[in-house]
Amino acid sequence: MPATTRYSRPPQRDSWFAPLSVDLFLKVLNTTLLHPFIAWLIPLCFRAQTVKWEAPPMVISIAWAIFITLCWMAGVINQRIAHGIPREVDLSEEVIVITGGASGLGLLIAEVYGMRGASVAVLDVNEMENTEARGVTFYKCDVGDKAQVAKVADEIEKELGTPTVLINNAAIVIGKSLLDLSLEEVDKSFSTNLLGPFYCLKTFLPAIIRGGNGGTIVNISSVIGTVGAAQLTDYAAAKAGISAMHRSLTAELRESHPEIRTVLVTPGQLSTPLFYGVQTPNSFVAPVVEPVDVTKEIVAAIDSGRGATVGMPLYARWIDWFNVLPVGVQVIVRAIAGVDRGMKSFVGRGGSSIEKESSE
Image (cartoon, rainbow, N blue to C red):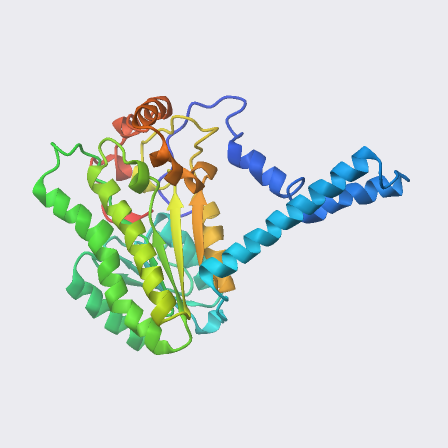
């Protein structure tokens, strides 16, 4: 988070192994034993020690290197089939629209691209935490109000140019049980978390297509949209809708406008004000995700002009398999994970009981 950010994650139950997580071990493996270059160094080192080709260590190391190389190639082919050929990106020509970019993840992405020469438009109902962000233009806008979105879209096109990238990032968390939610709160939650992305897509996607040079659509969903959680019925329903909308939109664009790239981001708990006060039940299996790590993935996808499906941390990449488990097993897993107890300590932005429109 930038130095201007006023909120920090409440202290976790720290211990000597607190920094350790499954994701950390996987990151180490991906740069060592699971990397093709390192895998092929092993048999080369054996050969330098005059180990015979038919010796078991040499055979095993070569087989391992071949396996890792094939897996790496399969990943590249899978990426190409799933998302097509990357589009060309020139940051000096990019106009990036970020909803909920006044703080958190959205602000971090805005600052990165603003400093690198892109034109960045931030849409938010809250004032920006960093009012001196270079290259970033702020537009006060409630994305749940389609009239405001349309008005701001005209201003952006006149002042910055035709948008090329849209990042649907704005969200709110109310954090109440269904019985405690008022109908007004339900309307507000869905208008921001689900209808807002629809309004922005309907408004900005035609402009991106009209630009003629392709573009990128980034939708921020959540693992909660797959597993659900107590006190998050409205948020979970909206995020499930975002994931379904993204997949359907990607299928449509693949046929009608293949030059448009789509990126779906499905993070676990982020250390942003959106879930202020929530304690992660297990920092080893389900560590809190830092916004800078998610930003790296989003920026890498946009910069390379490719589509992507980003899940962070590791369990988020496999979360769809949760619903394949027998229902009884799902209940046991939920109890062990503590997913339905996490919101009990939720206090909202700066200690309030309801989170205003913010970034993920």
